[in-house]
Length: 303
Image (cartoon, rainbow, N blue to C red):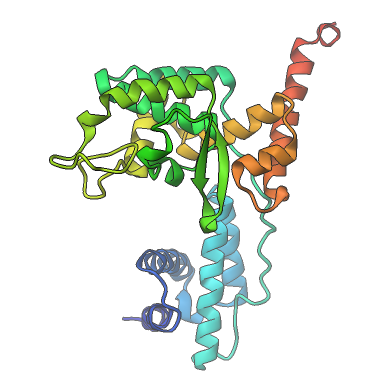
């Protein structure tokens, strides 16, 4: 094994023992450093002998590959942490990543579906055979009507909707509770689904507490399974699945509220955002959409 390989192994061991990094985090660091190592080895020096110019070339390559800003930023961070560790161990006398400035990462605008696309998506999810259609149509409708995160949606207890409420009490990030609205359409969809819910109960588990039970190990539908169904529904609705994810339903909820004239502070509370700056990004999306409508639909714009 090269010195770079030995150093990587030692770095991952340190992250595991001293910082109690989770297995998924360690795997991500390993992949990121393997990517950097392959690039630097192709240039000659590898991880152990890389100069500042080599690291700068790697950082530039990450941007040229078209990786998402978040992925590129994570890989740069992994390389920086690695070289800080190597310097601290005395294996190198310099940190080649120190003087390389990473590009500023702007907050990307969220992917948004139009109202018409949302209608098609809900219809496609509900068009699945029998009880499956009622279940997945209900899930998409709930996520869009209430702005729920996927983790919140799949963790809804049956008791939360058993009495046909106008609002849900949702436990969000950090255990903070908030009210999530339910419109008449969503409430009607939930009622229809509750009639077939017993079909999804695990055998001998009539006391299953989840709104969306499953026969899997968790006893409830997983976020991964819902995301798979959402991809299938998007394709059936004629929407590119790349544009659709469980979180996109939450984005649509927020953007369509603002387009309809909702107050930003109200939307912040409904989403459960601690910082209004996080919510404010939707104003950019809504403004862009409204500007496009004015430019294409206003009578004077056509002259």
